[in-house]
Amino acid sequence: MTMASHHKILIVGGGTGGICVAARLAKAGLAADIAVVEPCQTHYYQPLWTLVGAGIFSFEESARPMKRLIPEGVIWHQDAALKISGEQKVVVLASSKILTYDWLVLAPGVELDWDAITGARDAINRPNVSCIYAPDYVVKTKSAIESAKNGRLIFTFPPPPVKCAGAPQKIMYLADEILRKKGNREQVEIQYRSALGGVFGIPVFAEVLNKVIQRKGIKTFYNQKLVEVRPTENIAVFADLATGKDLELVSYDYLHLIPPMHPPLMIRDSDVSIAAGPGKGWIDVDPFTLRHQRWSNIFALGDACNAPNAKTGAAIRKQAPVLVDHLLQAMTGGQSKKIYDGYASCPLVTGFGKVVLAEFGYDGKVMPSFPWNQAKESRLMWWLKTLILPRLYWYLMLRGRA
Ligand SMILES: Cc1cc2nc3c(=O)[nH]c(=O)nc-3n(C[C@H](O)[C@H](O)[C@H](O)COP(=O)(O)OP(=O)(O)OC[C@H]3O[C@@H](n4cnc5c(N)ncnc54)[C@H](O)[C@@H]3O)c2cc1C
Image 1 (cartoon, rainbow, N blue to C red):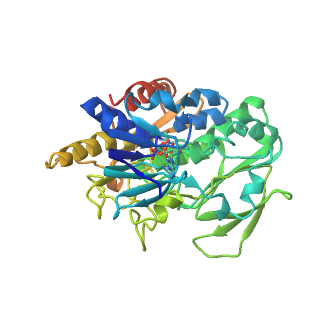
Image 2 (image 1 turned 120 degrees about the vertical axis):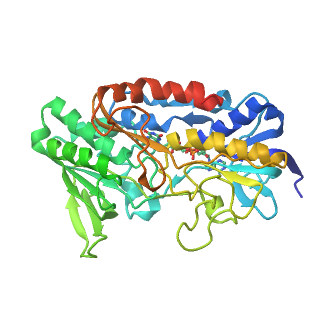
């Protein structure tokens, strides 16, 4: 029988949410009470991957060694959580090590479900198929786009929830410009095939994005779900979610393939996730306090939660201080009054040097940071996206300062 190790605060996941919370708790003087469970040696700033895919940044610029980001004094279990029981207050690691805790913070992010699309695992290893959501397949995106000299490029959007729901169209707008720069945009057709009913959920931003799509001559197809890829024939098969019509077979020269996303199995299989009905498999938190609905000593933030915010790092920047305040108060028998209002932001890159900064909260409430109309393409916001936000991430967010 393996002996259990006990931690006052255990954090599962050393991505954006896990490190932000660890840093804030360490700043509050609790470093010695914290352990982080995280299997990977590398931490990625994923928002850069859209720009890595377009060849604007190198992949290496999106990565840092995990050990440099875990705050000093915090224990790092370099291992994956295999099983969680909220009832027993236990986390079992892949190495069979057993961890117990007083307080648990869950931030395991989401996984890409390659098996949900027939043929996707084979297709993604071909030179003319890529995915900016996956570290192994983001780098080849630009060369794959460039080599589709004639014919059709298809950009897909899977059934939600999707992290950074703007990214599937950002890479498409950049692809359009890559091909214009090469001088062969007129020879290719660009298609956007999305499982959603429109380009963006918030009308004021949808309006400007529809104009971008029109200007660029992109063909849109909504309520379309990619169900199969036949990579030997370069055929993508779509189901029409609105009409239930027969499957449509579409040929492609380049395919941007994004699988559906869900929390890791150890969450879906546990008593911390919603057991049935809407939100099944996602961590069951109060959307305003981020405290677990069933287990009051568990909190969660980030992409794996069922809270109805847009799944972004920007959301975590606002979630982390709220979660930490609730946790610190709860540890001393108090009650925090802080509320997470659903804030998220999506810098919608519409081309080289152009960004529409969409900021919004629960129920699509527009929440601009700047005193001007943000629903238009802006060069200033491009500098924000490419210069300021990466620094804000590495030097402030991950150090518990923003
Ligand atoms: C292409 C792309 C573009 C994006 N663009 C933007 C943007 O412009 N703006 C923005 O704000 N956000 C953007 N995002 C979204 C943002 O990166 C995520 O919302 C954010 O990283 C989520 O943080 P998280 O902590 O929930 O998950 P992650 O940061 O993904 O971290 C999860 C961590 O949990 C670990 N983990 C997984 N399973 C286990 C396990 N069993 N045991 C222990 N640890 C485990 C993982 O290894 C990982 O380190 C983008 C994402 C992508 C992919």
